[in-house]
Amino acid sequence: MRIELIRLKFNDTHSYKYKPFKYCCDEIQNNECIEFTNENLTNFNVDYDKEYGFIPQLCTSHTEVITSYEDEWEQTDNYPIQFCPHCGKKIEISVVEEINVSDKYNELSKQRNELWKKCQRTDSKKKESELREQVRKLDKQIDSFYWLDEWKEDVYV
Image (tube, rainbow, N blue to C red):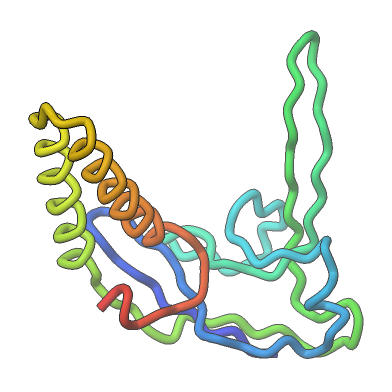
């Protein structure tokens, strides 16, 4: 199974998007304990880029509730896998392209800030509600730059 990643660079940060890929078998696709992530990686034998940090991996995921005194929180540990636990095929993950999307990100941020200023200045509750909805839509678009999800060229370029 081969997963190709695109690294998006914007401002002083980055994120990853993956090109559409096919799972090697239905079992791994339907396994609720396997996630594609670059968060909470516990096995340090994975690809690490000094400039960009951990590259997303397919992982077995384990979440447990930790209790300390009166505090309680969930802790998730993700263990990267290099072979499918069901069919044994090798999992290959690579960054195939790097794209600077700062202009698009900045454009959306600028639009959002202008709408928010208009929203703060209006006296009309109806107009404020409409502007807030537009701001929410832009917030979702801006937030999507950070998500690890499928690459959609028309959204980021």
